Image (cartoon, rainbow, N blue to C red; front, side):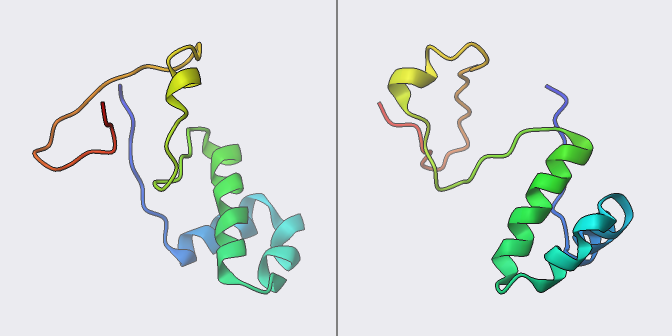
Amino acid sequence: MGAQHHLWSADELDALIKQKYPQFWPTYCNVPFSVMRADIGRIAILHSYGGLYADLDVYPNRETYAAATLAIRKVFTTGHRTAMKK
């Protein structure tokens, strides 16, 4: 599907905020927990580059997922247990 994966480092995220969202730099720097910077960064990445974000510890509601207009259900087998259960 042409998707690309990029694991952002803290330095890359800092640079993105400084360059594209300087008005949020003070807020970004002064949040009490580093996970809050990751949350802000996630939104900045999506706003700047587009894409899709999904937490790995969240499963879709199977009853509504199949009916979602944009949902494309594919199963990939890797030889490991997967999150999809029948």
